[in-house]
Amino acid sequence: MQFDLKKYEDVLQKQVRKGKLSPKTAIAYMSCMERLSEYCIRSPDCSLSEAIVGVSGANEQVPKIIAAVKKYERDVMDNPKCLLYGHDLQKLRQDHKQREIGRPLALEEKSYLHKINALRNKKLKLAFRLQYRSGLRISEVAALTPDDITFGDDGNMTLFVRSGKGRKSRTVDVMDDDYLYQNLKELSEESEGTLFYSASYMQKKAAEHNLLTHDLRRINSKERFRKELENGSSRRAARREVQQQFGHGKPRITSAYLGTDWEEVNENE
Image 1 (cartoon, helix red, strand yellow):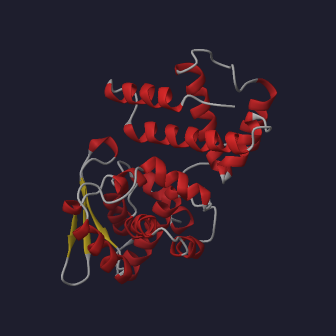
Image 2 (cartoon, helix red, strand yellow):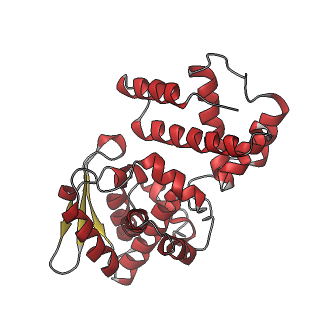
Image 3 (cartoon, helix red, strand yellow):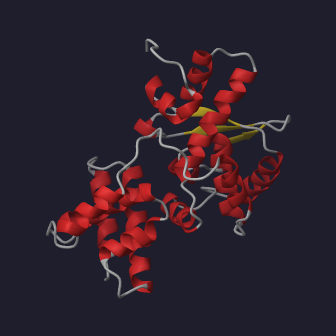
């Protein structure tokens, strides 16, 4: 099965320019279809449903890939339900329901850093390690330039996110990491323009290694929360700090990211 990825990308970019689609969503759709297309080329005899499961890497990615395919049907082929429909679609959705923000991590926390450190591509390793230590969205990591990073003499790093979710800017403190500090500083001194790859490419490479980039963000939220508590902050103050660093609009979103680390009940938001 072959997909017209160039046409799909053109459609997505046109919708972004018209304000009908966010850049982040367009990147996610494109990443899904690129990975699905490669899988179908490698395994030409498999069905589309089998390809979606095969390329997903983790159950929570299946609904995202389904959404990308449905958009391809509607906006590129102008023929909804021509590729994925009926029993196959129902079974896919039933077997791989989208889990809530506060879902359990796909792997143990310590496993993520092990996987990142095992990467041979140094730029990818730095990008994922930076997301792990900063909690940035993968699209925010992809947009970073050398001018957006401040390297303190004390080994601390500060990031300036120019256009986060909702087109809001914010300043983010990177958690201590000597390896990241030294190597990212070298990369910044050698680079012009953006430091890393596109978000869609990094999501694709992460999936190949069974990494979910958004899990790195959720791990960081937990580590920040625990650190704030260790430093004597109240639970509410610790959550508020995470909320500010992450650019969340509502406390309940931060609470969902923290999951079992946030155990207060009957609180008045």
